[in-house]
Length: 404
Image (cartoon, rainbow, N blue to C red; front, top):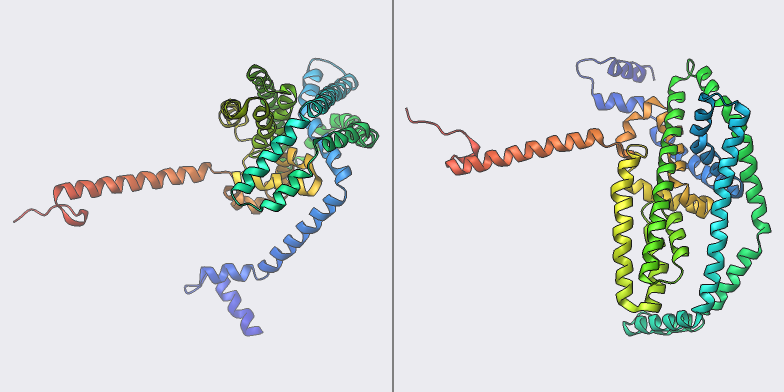
């Protein structure tokens, strides 16, 4: 034991024959155990959040909404408005936005019910056509036929009626959201002063919290504005094309704009189905092209420029976060996937200086892109040198040797 301790001390002291790899491994003897403990803790936390999803989801939604409207409070207070009036204005603004969205969703639900009633026969026939096509290519013909034969569009009407009629089940959710907005709206007035008090003791944590709030606000506000524009343009385009339920699908496009990567495909499926019912394949192709142009320009060109570096997450992590949070806390988790993932990053990475090495792996690729550009430039220069050497007839790229 004494000899082992002496050898470890000698290797860690940086002698001539010290192996850097051995020194690094000696400093992390329990790394694998820590990794397993971290995975176990994350699993327990995920199951715990899933168990309280009915409370956590509206609570975190209230947090995000409070963060988004905080600049309104700051703007009012800078113009001499008292804190109480500024708090009331913030709360009224958020509640007004939620009520407007809720009213639009109720209208859309009503229109969707009427749409299903009008097109129930066409939907059933469309299902039979799909079943026949699947059977023709040999995809479990008997089972497909039985599934589509038992499909009844009126069952969707019953489900929709139960969803709308069971509004009492939403009362608790709305009460939690409004209560949290009221309480957090009042507490938010103390946040700037609390951060100033905390900064001398924990400057990195304060900086991380401020950065998190700014990033979440930029992402949510930009996504809301661009999603609203996307929904309105889709609505108008579908009206011009003649697709039934254009308002419903425009609202669906707005809601799905908060779901990265897969929201576009979710919003595209219903318009395609109803376009096929009334116009066949030509109208389906028109809908696909219009959605690809509108949503592609807004989500792939405009949104990244507006959001900038607010969301430094790789595409893989973004997609996985949507799936993960949807499983943990339900459908609202897909909408809040980015703010939730940024919160996990704040806790584990941004507020821990020892974890800065993992930032490029999460999506901060500015330095990586610079290194890749340098590699590409070096490779290009090397190719040019080889071509020049080959043209001059010099083997291996060596400069030609003149005869003495």
